[in-house]
Amino acid sequence: MSAVPSSRTPAPSWLRIPDDANALAPAVWPSGSDRDADGVIRIGGVSATALAERFGTPLYVLDEDDVRAHARRTLAAFRAAAAAHGVQARVYYAGKAFLSTEVVRWVADEGLAVDVCSGGELAVALRAGADPAHLGFHGNNKSVTELENAVDVGIGSIVIDSIVELDRLAAIAERRGVEQSVLIRVNSGVHAETHDFLATAHEDQKFGFTLQDAPAVADRVRAASGLQLVGLHCHIGSQIFGTAGFQESAARLVEVHAAIGDLPVLNLGGGFGIAYTSVDDPTPIDELAAGIIDAVAAECARRGIPVPNLAFEPGRAIVGQAGVTLYRVGTTKSVELGEGAVRLYVSVDGGMSDNARPALYGAQFSARIASRASGDEPALVRVVGKHCESGDIVVDHEYLPADVSPGDLLAVPATGAYCFSLASNYNYVPRPPVVAVRGGEARIIVRGETIDDLLSRDAGIPTKGTV
Ligand SMILES: *Cc1c(COP(=O)(O)O)cnc(C)c1O
Image (cartoon, rainbow, N blue to C red; front, side, top):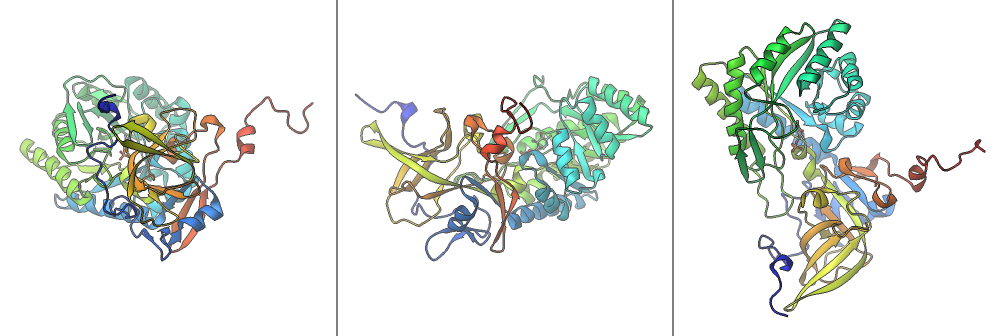
């Protein structure tokens, strides 16, 4: 046997061997996370061992102060950048990143509106007591029932995604004798992914209208007595670093915005990236906000039109860093990769059912032993789940102290966004609870599922009273 095949090179080039495999990278963990005198990780002042003992594992932990701080900072950043050009900015929290009534209340409390994309998400936001006027509703295939319900509760705005939907919504609003505020979803042709963006002239994706079609769509909206056109809407992707993709997209949108004329709002969507590992270096939110809004203003100036009010829809950037998932290590095994290379597999009691992102997108995460600090040398590990898929990976590449063992608690940070919301019951594994931590206190905000919850949907099981 000769060299290790490149596909099995044990560590990717981006992964550094840490000086200290116990260290908590500040960009990745909730602010204020630390280790207590015994080396146990604390989140929001609550120790990981206490959390695991009280609530079990796997466990989603959400740091309330960290969610609130990101919400506050993001709103302040966009407001300040907009104010510099004499306009206003509204920030919608994209609920699909993580939605529960508590989180809706936290972000609403910090001054954010909420963006939903299904009847279920709308129900959560309303049940939380959110002001319907501060909700937006997008999605490429909202049902007639979802549209009717949204109009009936007085939702602030609906993002129209197709002609079919435009006509449906116009009919609904007209029947009810209301004037529904709407935006038109357009594809700017800019697709951004992390560090790069791709700009195309032709669109081949399910969301929205092309830039070329937007003016005709605007005419059709304006001709509908039940609809009030307030602006254009665009969302170019997710986990984006840097401002270049947003600026290119904004320039293309402003051209159409100017051609349509007299639109009070331009909604540029979300997609602002966060750090998942210590090598990720996202642009600070105030720099992003200024970079994007300055570019919009410059484009408006060039065309001699007033700068519109702006709206943004961050999801991941609000909740991502605030979440940590705790697991219990069940088994470990060492695999010889040849040439002396070894990978340590660390199996935990969850996996792709509580974090689908690695399996879905090849997403990278990091991990730390949470229940103790260790002086052992770092070893290359792959953290895997308990599901019946070899792609059931939680953390593809990480260095952990070599003595990581069954019984240890493992913490995976930056799991606040798109983990709980993408969770499944694959292999009939119950979905974990969500615990909010703040000031040394912990409380359940979403209870965990039980095996009985899972069985309760099976219509083949006779219930009491049936023969
Ligand atoms: C998903 C989505 C968002 C939020 O994206 P993040 O990457 O979480 O910021 C915002 N707007 C729309 C239309 C989306 O589909």
